[in-house]
Amino acid sequence: MRFDALWTHARAWLPARSNVDARERLRAVGGAGLGLLVAALLSHWLASPLHASVWLIAPLGASAVLVFAVPASPLAQPWSVIGGNTLSAVVGIAAANWIPDPALAGAVAVAGAIGLMFSARCLHPPGGAAALLAVLTHTTHFSSALFPFFTNSLLLVLAGVAYNTLTGRRYPHVQVARPPAANARFSQADIDAVLARYNQVLDISRDDLESLIQQTELESYKRRLGTLHCADIMSATPVSVEFGTPLQEAWALMHERRIKALPVTDRTRRVVGIVTQADFFRQLDLQHHEGIAGKLRDLIRATRTVMSNKPEVVGQIMTRQVRVASADRPVVDLVPLFSEGGHHHIPIIDEEKRLTGMITQSDFVRALYRAVGPA
Image 1 (cartoon, rainbow, N blue to C red):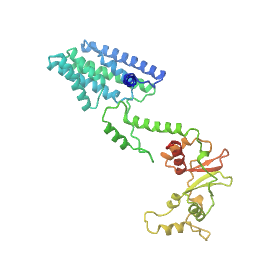
Image 2: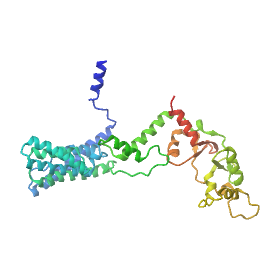
Image 3: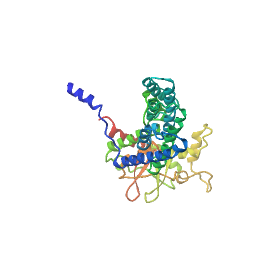
Image 4: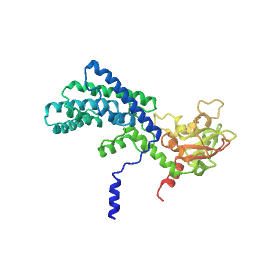
């Protein structure tokens, strides 16, 4: 029992497996080498007219790892790299000037640099090394913060923008403000609340975290729903109407069968639209709520005259753009339609494009519960 506990503790020290493929590794390796080379050559060229003896800083190697290997990290963004290295250098130079003991100066410089980077929202791990480097080399001229620290960092960032963009990586990795999805299972406020409780620095942007959670949910649905197809959960032989079906007949049918939508088909049973309760109410003046029942009766009542100034048949009020799915389509493909697309009813068609079934949100939720619910 003691050996198991010891092994569990020892495993915590082992590195986790990487999910990055060889192509991405080569992209990062090539980018870091090329980016550092560009920054070094240009900095060396600038060192002569500036009369600078030091033209390249060691922490830039760590910055290159972040910029090219993890360009989506908040710690690798342009302001984090430039601001983090430059402001930390300023703190290190100040410590080198005012604290004689190098050990104490180094500790104060690194701690002060972290605090300043937090305040300036440019937390960058190599910044701590930049502050310590300024102390250990006893750099006392504040101009060194501009060259080489600022200049090196700026050149590396510019190389990172060019290389990452050319190789298909978004850099700078600006957070994308997504509109809240309809029927989403969690909101942006929920993520903010959890992050506030977690209260630690995450090496992932907030929008990436939200996207990963959503994709993980979808992957879980795919795995659990397995080979379930639309034909397995649809309501077979659904009630439908045709283009010329009178409104009164369609409304009575919906009321009798207790359904909220009717597929509209042509004479060959091919879907040409869908009529829902919302389509009926859309024809009414809902700005004034009084007398809605009477307005509805007037709408669906057939006009006995030749001319009519209101809709008379289903085809005049139906929704023509209707989303359909084939009977052999995997059920998991309907997740975005029901969860984000705002759909409540999906007509199902066979190989000949004829109506063969109907899947409602209730059908989908029931199938989902059976697949992922408790055994």
